[in-house]
Image (cartoon, rainbow, N blue to C red; front, side):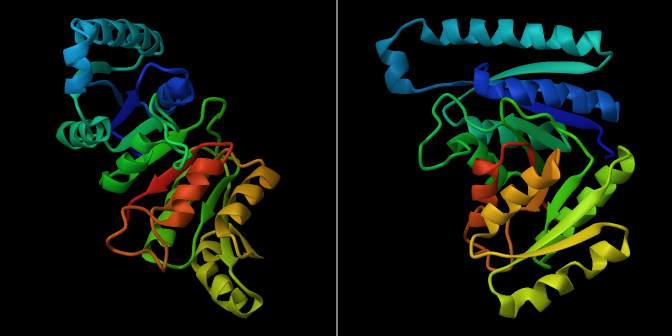
Length: 265
């Protein structure tokens, strides 16, 4: 995976511990630069009621990033730390990734204000929806691996991009790529098979399944295969242009035990 810079976004909580661990490891494997970003969320009403809270949170963020920087330096990484104050953490992450030219954003699945309706967390959901670069979401206990890498595709440009990235990762890190296409019914099975032709031609193993719940099939197949990474596009064939992220991607990121890479074509 040819990356010049990885942006690791952390909120300093346990939810970010997996992203921190795997983000540092990935930057080391790719021999690329590492940007450490922590957003201090500014809520004017809360700040007005708690004078000095901003300084306290900033101090905590500084100490946390300094500890991460030491780990990065011990691994021989070129590292830059940044604290940003913003009312909108997801917006700050996306903007800093674009401003600093990051090729990948790495973050945890839920943050301090994770919402029940969004298993992945509100910040992660919005970063994925608005980011122009790939986003790697890492649950606390997950370890990123590449043997195999499971790519979910429906034959759309987003699905094709996921397969392409999985093949690239498998090649770069000595693993193997498995492409999965889920048909909603037996009648759609031929269409699912068609979506795998290109992946199989390039050496990926191809699997088709029939399920009314594509996200469930993807998560279960990843567990069965022991996949160290799920790769998928942010939308599928039925993705609405107005929607920031497709429902399948949202549910896979929220339910998967392992890391999920959401690619942007």
